Length: 169
Image (tube, rainbow, N blue to C red):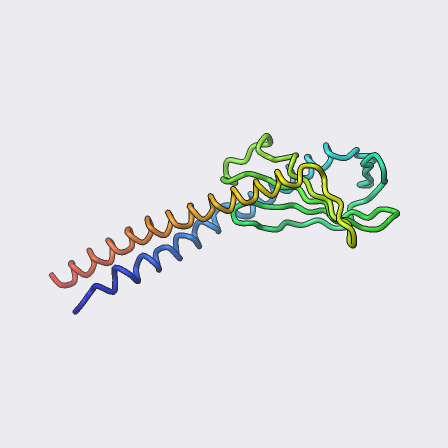
């Protein structure tokens, strides 16, 4: 029996298994910790007015209408939909944390903030820094995925080879 196809197929299967395991690891705890820290940055960026979630940014008094998380590779973007007297806009908090299990408060990036209005966009001066941080994170996540594919692939192909050798006697 020709086992040359195992060299191609098994690393791919091993890579898929490795990526799946890596993504599931510590996902919920990381999300909760990230949300808490993102809200702290949010409160520091704006003035927290009272306990009814009212904020003041120097121009407008607003309230948080909605909040959530979006993924960009290994990074997370937390967004808050804010309601003001002049309408709604979205406020995004960028993070540059690569390993969510080693999350520290100082790793949250306050400079990468973007604000959007529905029709005409308003950006903070640090928009480019936030975009650059995301592109760096995406490049690193690609390298992590490729290294995971290689390592898990070789491990799985070695295991299959040993089992086949054992079964043949």
